[in-house]
Each structure stands twice: as structure tokens, then as C-alpha cells.
Image 1 (tube, rainbow, N blue to C red):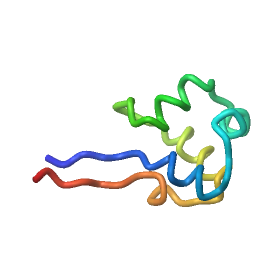
Image 2 (cartoon, one colour):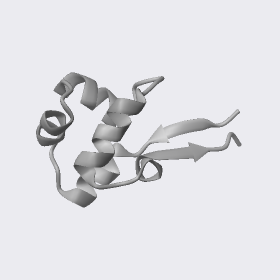
Image 3 (cartoon, helix red, strand yellow):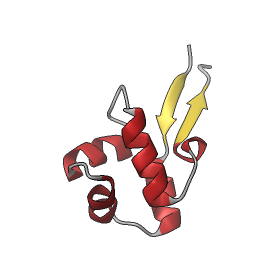
Image 4 (cartoon, one colour):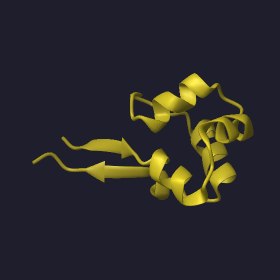
Length: 70
């Protein structure tokens, strides 16, 4: 089975938005957002994903990537 990779760092860099600014806009802690950014989570709430997409003006597909196992 493949895996889902979070590309939050790439979208944040494209939008020139800091971790602190995004955490404030989304309403989650810096620690939790850092875990998302560094792909150290196994689940993401849709409400959190929606808030991230709203703050970054992007689509879920911009933040999530599916990678097949080799």
C-alpha cells in the first residue's frame, strides 16, 4: 500500500507564510502544525485541513500527495 505525504512545507514556502502565522490563522498550536509540516502525523482532521486550505488559499491536493510503494 502507498502512503500519503503532507506537502505543507512546500505550499507555505510558495505563499511565503511562516509556521507561526499559519498556526495563528488556523487556530492550532505551533507544535501540532510543526508535526503536520514535518509529516509526523498519521491523521489530519478535515476541519484542520479546511482551515489550512483557507489560510493558504489552496486545495487539499496542493497539501496532500499520494506516493506508491516501489
